[in-house]
Length: 171
Image 1 (cartoon, rainbow, N blue to C red):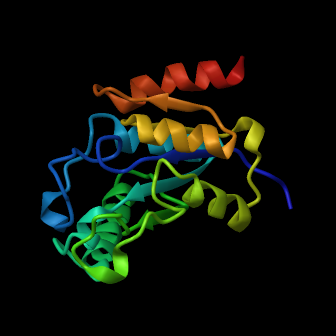
Image 2: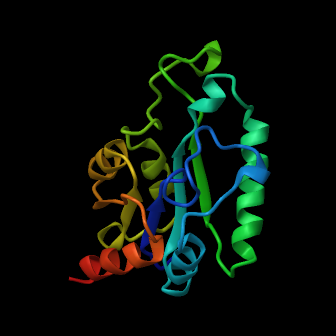
């Protein structure tokens, strides 16, 4: 099987505006340029994989089913822009969870690299051409621990930011 590069994207603050524990479909607001950036990655042959901590589940703010419904809506909205996500990995755990079954420092919880490592096992990924875009230091730490470069997105237009990331990846 031919290996593909993967673009790992954090969700809140990279794809959608982080308004704090976003889970209702009607609350989805894209970061400027996010659908275009994802479409460009699709067209360039990248797997686009979301890796997102979702401690709102652990805190009892929403359920895994509500989170999954939000992700279905996210995928549908992206499809309307000609963009697709190849996978979404979530970590609903948190060491200080109010719901006991989610109270742990799970290997998937960033800054741990578990979600990225699971994707390496699930897809034929070319690690050498892959990268992560996140908006927090924990995202970058997870990328480094998984052996791929991480890029810190500090806001603005994601498609414009992606141009600089792709230039750095081609060097």
